[in-house]
Image (cartoon, rainbow, N blue to C red; front, top):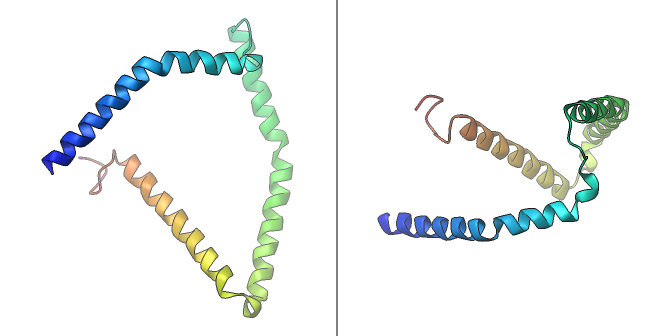
Length: 122
């Protein structure tokens, strides 16, 4: 167990050194590649305007999302009505999807507890 811990620690140290060495060049390259998305000058007013644009763009997308939600609900109802024609593959995919959702829920709970398995307070 201690040898595994030392291996993990050495790998983490190597990764840290790599990021320290190449991180700034990657950051500069990323900014250069996406400079058309950067607002100059970055003022408080411009940031507030962009946040309002994002908010109202999201609000404008609600009717489309609402419509899509009800289409998916209707599809699920139709599947339930015709469940006798349901194939085993489809049921397996649905079960795997449910299992994946549960796994993500458990991972979120563990992360929310501060990566402990026993409770919210260590």
